[in-house]
Length: 184
Image (tube, rainbow, N blue to C red; front, side, top):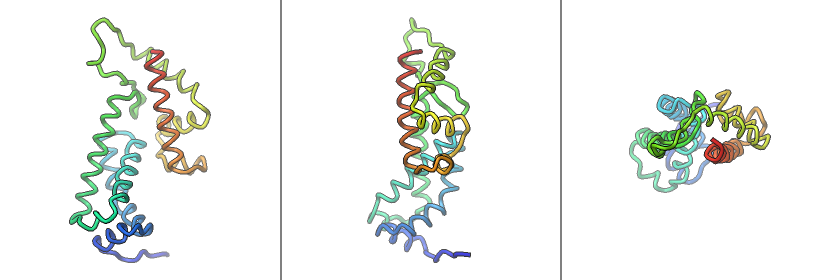
């Protein structure tokens, strides 16, 4: 059994500030579940919660020497995660996909009284748009949103990097948003 060396949080943050990957991995593993549970409870979307984790930890990594001034890393991480989750909620409100596959792309305030918006036509446009995605984007989209797999699970299953999964998802969602706007 491999044991991790013990670091107190000040030592851990100092090592992360020096770009120590091992120290960062320890911090990541320590707070992964906390961030995931909080984000999932708020967003009700596993892939969105995964994205919150990635964004939160990326911000921690990018802080560099500023990490040395943090007194309570858990509170700091929770604050970043909360902000990222709220950003994700805003994105969900503007996008067309939620965990249950409902369409909510258009803000009702954006629709004039003369326009009729049909969720059914938007859903049909979504289905057609999914068919038009490049194969890899379609597969990643289906695994993440339709089967509810986490980005890392998709990466492992397809033997691609986590970042590649994120890129495929961003491109797929961008294409589908535009497709639905155009054809629904």
